[in-house]
Every structure is written in structure tokens, then in C-alpha cells.
Amino acid sequence: MTKQQLTLGIIGAGNIAGQYARDLTTYPEVHLAGIADIDAPRAAALAEKSNSRSYASPDELIADPAIDVVVNLTTHTAHVDVITKALNAAKHVYSEKPLALSYKDAQGLVQLAEQKGLRLGCSPCTYMGEAQQTIWKLLREDKIGPVRIVFAEMNWGRIESWHPAPGGFYAVGPLWDIGVYPFTLLTTIFGPARRALATGKVLFPDRVTQEGVPFHIETPDFVTGTIELESGVLVRFTVNFYVSMKSKQKGVEFHGDKGSLWLGSPQWFNAEAEYAPFGEPYEPVPYVREPYDGTEWGRGVLDMVNAIVEDRHHRATGAQAAHVVEILEAIATSMREGRSAEITSSFTQPAPMEWGV
Image 1: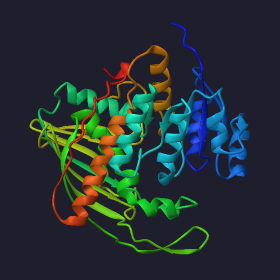
Image 2 (image 1 turned 180 degrees about the vertical axis):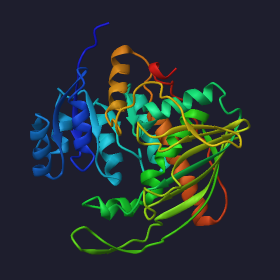
Image 3 (image 1 turned 90 degrees about the horizontal axis):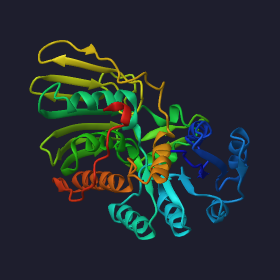
């Protein structure tokens, strides 16, 4: 089948947008028409680099009848507004994570997309990586027997050490920014979560930007706890903006009756993938195919575009993203109220990649 080309527009020209634009300009199935941002010069700079048009505003891009898909890369707090406007303008949407900052809002976006007959996709698509697909294949093949417990560590360092504008990250905290990675991976593999019990605190309240400007944080920069999945698998997790990414405690470790599997990171497509029989040391396992070096951020967008053309389900759905938002909300409730919190939503688990079966 000859695939048609769909036209894309990016809203949000921040730090991650350059990486998306890099990927999207390499896919023959899509045409990156242009970039919009509330900071027009920033949009213009990225548009020039990606050989695309600079729109005067996000609203102008959304109103362009040539745009088929809006790729929403705005800051966390703007997601709901931008997605709503794009869906109401009859555009498919693929958004950066999280889908929303409340489950009510996330579910409302899913329902709006369904009512409009439009696709709603959401990051992270990182379970589509070669390392992640390798581990998932071994789990489907019962390599380690029934999985009872998973350890998920997201030590993300101090955002101000590498990002020029860390304020937005600390406003929402590591739970809402990086918690989505292990929870999306694990719900992809094992299905929905049903209960959360967590605690968190501000470890390092007073920080300094790269420009030497002091700032104070009040949202917990450290969160830890357990998630019970419907399948019975228990997940012990840690997310923080304090401990270095070089910590020896990192990645996702799956423990089963016959042994263990270790994924060095839920994000990097070329992360370490290792297996150990029970009581034995870890050894690397071969990837299902040669891995992408780093993270191919556009892979989820491409899968959704191909799904539209092929009239099939796309993998990174709004419904799963909304379920992950409910997990985050339950964790926040547990921290605030000192009790376990229930999770009730469900979603259809995505299929493995064709090359990962």
C-alpha cells in the first residue's frame, strides 16, 4: 500500500521541540509544515532550522486548513487548552506528557477526541524503543516466570544543571514529569494499575539557575511508593530531581520466579538489557534489532500517522495517557492524605512493534 503524506504542525518550540523536529523531518510519511510558539522569535528560529514555516501564533497554526496533525510540545500547564483548541478545529493531536494535570481533564480530552472522530496520542512512546521491546518480548516468552515485583528508579538529577528554564519542571515536580515513563512502560506490559501508596518531600528547596538566579521550590522533588497493578504485579518506584542520573540505582528491574530482567532506562532506546537466572549475575541479552542511539521522540507521532492512513489503532493512545494521569493523581492523593488511593480507569494495551514480536 502506498502511504499518503500527512501535514504536521508543532506548537511549542522549547527544549524538546528541536528533537521532535529533527525526527519528523526524516519521515517520508509526514510533512512538517511549521512551528508556533507564544514566543514568536523562538518559533522562527526552530522553523528556520527545520526548513518550515513560522506561524505568528499557536492559534494561527491551529486555524490553518493544511494542518492534519498538531504536535503539542507546550509546557505542562498549557496541554489541555492547546489540545482542546486543536480537537475543536478538527485536527488530530499528539501531545507531550502528561496529557493533563488532572484525571478529569485528561478523560475530558479523550472523550472530546472520540466525539470528534479524531486521533489523540500522547508521549511517552519510549516503550517503542528497541531495548524496551526486547525486555517485553522476553517477558512474553516467560523468560523469568511469573513477575511478582518490579523496581523502577527515575533519578533525574537537578534540572537546573542542564535545562535553561527549570521552573516549569519544579512547579509540577518529578512525579508529573518523569513518573510517566515507568508507569507508561509498566502499564503497557502488564495492564492497568489499581492502587497507590506513596510519600514525598522537598529534599533540596533552594536552588540556582545556570544564570546564577536563586529559586525556591515547594512541590516535592522526591516521591517514592508502591503501585499495585490489576495483574497482581507490585511496583516499587522512586522519582526525584535530586539524585544524579549516574546513580547505580537506575532503570527498571523485573523479578520473577525463575530470574530477573533489567532495563537500564525506560527512556533510552539503546538502554542496557540484561537477564539473570535466580541467584546468578546479570548478562546482556541481544536486542530484537539494532537500537536507535538515544530516544527517537518522533516514533510515537509516526506510529499514529501510519495508523490513521492504515485505519488501525495507534499505540500511544490518549486513553492510556489518561490512565497514567489517574495513577499520578492517586499517588498525589496518597502523599497528601497518608493513605492508599484507588485507581479505577482502564485502557486497551498497545500491541508490540511489528519487529518486536
